[in-house]
Structure formats: structure tokens, C-alpha cells
Length: 195
Image 1 (tube, one colour):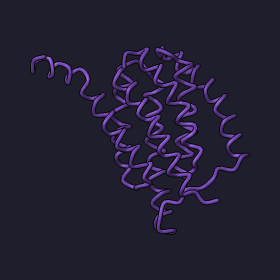
Image 2: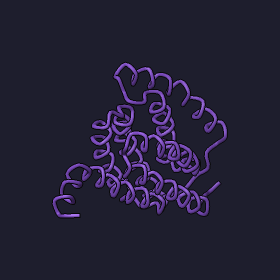
Image 3: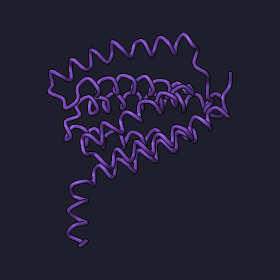
Image 4: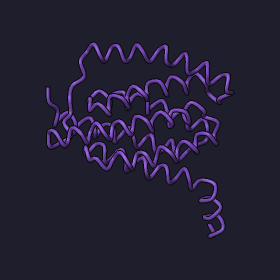
């Protein structure tokens, strides 16, 4: 391998690599419940907005736009909790809220899938289901609910296959790592949960 090959690879995949690094760091910081996770996640979100758009995964690109809003909200909500309580406190998700959110993901998937199909997305309905439930998981994470980690594990496992199919190997590896980080987050958040 020559330097020309390295530079050529970086030119083709550098943005995706930067997204991988920022995402891993942001999720790891989230598992540790550190407020700095939010600005790092915001950087990763903007990077992946471009990566997914270039790959024709329009629902994923649109999801990143939604993540910007959720990230800003999560940052504010965690900061407010830390100021009021001295720490980012983990809370349980009421069963009724869990069921409601999971059920709302179904029509959300259908609406987003129809929109993505009209925009000629590569995998409109799969992409839309993953987007819909990623939004649910993100909302739960911003609200400090442990259930976000369970949903992220399920969603990320499916994302791995989608990214392999779209030849986004670094991103597929990233999502395999995110499954591990979600398991770590689940373990750590359960330990620190309040009823």
C-alpha cells in the first residue's frame, strides 16, 4: 500500500471515518452521562447527514436533521437536570408511555416510507422504519429513560445489515460497535436508575 492509496482512500471515506469517530465518542460519553456528549453528537450528526445523503439513504439523512433538534433538546434537558439535581439522573419509562411510543412508530414508519419512496430513496420503507424507531430511542435518551438502550440495540442490529447492503462498511462496523456501547449504556444506566 502506498501513500497514494492511503490518500485516495481518505479522500473517498474520510468524512465517513470522521463520522464514525465522532459518533463513537458521543455515544461513549452518553453512556457515562457526561454533558459533553451532546455537542460531540451534534458534530457527528452533521457529518452523517452528508454521508447518508451522498449514499442515497434519504430517510437516514432526514433523520440526522431530526437528531439536530433532539440533540439540542437533550443537551438542554440534561443540563437543566444537572443544575437542579447535581447529576444527570436516569429514570424509568412508564409502561403506558413505552407502548404508546412503540405504537406511534408504526404510522410514523408508513408516512416516512411513503415520503422516502416519492423521493426515490434507496431503501424507502426499511429506512423509514429505522428512522421512526431511532426517533423514539433518541427521545427516550433525551428524557433519560433506560429503555432507549434496548431500542437502540434492536435498531442498530438492523442498521448493520442495511449499511452492509449499501457498501458503507465503516458505518456497518460503527453500528456493530454501537450495539456494544448500547449494552454498556444499558448496564451503567440500570445501575444508576431511580424509580
